Length: 251
Image (cartoon, rainbow, N blue to C red; front, side, top):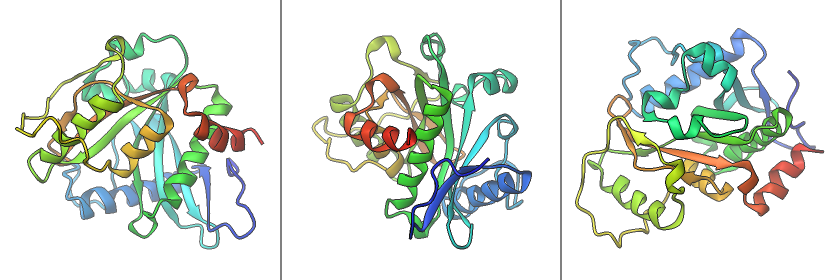
């Protein structure tokens, strides 16, 4: 498929959907470099140089490339309801009870395995990736976007606790949209007023769009992180981002 957003004159990056097995493989290799080699995650497949699971073949893969070299510098995967039915459920259902989410009326899209090359973490790549996602949402008329945003657990949960305090104050979903983690994060004593912890980039991007945390985090020991389930009702998309991203997607 052609680029969802055509690169502008002088633009360093563009976004497109993977159109071949080679594209998907390159995304999986980027994921492995970041998750296994950089973060030390146990991906369960040994030292293969590839991060893959059974969800991959049921997903579309959104890629950010350098315009000149076409090297992939960021990616995420997209799983719609039809793909989830083939896969036996959404990936998030391996970590959370999503009954209240799957019961919502409207088209749903899950994003996951989002990663960005270290050289592109200043914000440009995630902005381009999000712009492509906006184009996909518009094309497929998606009503709800959701996924897991990770928080590092190397400090035994202090950061997670502080960030969850912040989310409870500013970005928590209503009770009828709450999910239950299958493996809750072990409790850590942190002052309830500690809400100034910085948000990781993906979680920050979700929050800026107007997404809500749908409950407490789930501990993922394989990745050494806590995952927060984030839900964006497209009708509640922040107006600033709606004009910036959805407006471009409609051009």
